[in-house]
Image 1 (cartoon, rainbow, N blue to C red):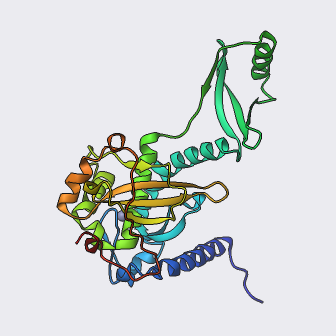
Image 2 (cartoon, rainbow, N blue to C red; image 1 turned 45 degrees about the vertical axis):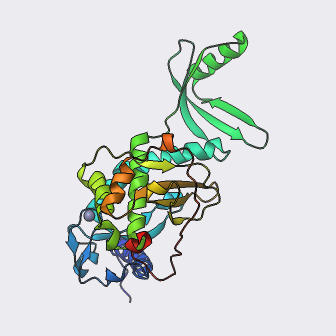
Image 3 (cartoon, helix red, strand yellow; image 1 turned 90 degrees about the horizontal axis):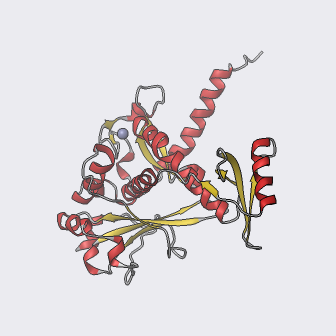
Length: 306
Ligand SMILES: [Zn+2]
């Protein structure tokens, strides 16, 4: 009789299958020809790894990273070491999920949990739901919470009240840093080590990994990108920007495009990048945009600036 597989072995096998399926996707990335893994450098910590680090039982194995996170419809894109991958999960993803959930609720998809207080009441939990077609917003307090119900009915009977709403849209700095991290990894995906070892790439990595360059303020653009495909663009106007725009499409039912500006690779591009002030330059214009499809031949980012 065939011996039944133990529960632990089954779990291990399914993890292995999942890993090998995704790993072949990552391996097929034509932009990372280095990945036939004599050694592989984690794009975040710059530690080097060998083929044995694909074995998930070693101390700090290579793991597949989804960019953006799977919850926001991201795809398995590249390898980072487990340590770096976990930092992402614990710091950025939860904040980003809060922000995106709130965005979806305001666009009419799903509910938004928040807290409210009426006049001098204690704060209590409530849910907000929007019907975008009928332009209505409904706020429902928890029916099982008599305290909330009492306060809501007092408000209704008196006809007016001072209401405080407390929303949690996620930590803005962590969300922006998370976007910058996606953009950096995406640039690695497209340009390979040519970008992350360049002056521009190192400037961003120092900020993300080593807490240096704290003057860097992630430049996130979240409007007027509706018609952009996910990908990397070169900004050519205003002329002195000499930077990339990395665009992500987040979500599936409700989608939102978010763009992140990354410095070009050369020394002089850093100086230009430092002086970009989103408030002062007004809306960016893309007079000339270079977009590279992922299935095209890989190119070296330096070529863009020659
Ligand atoms: Zn790492």
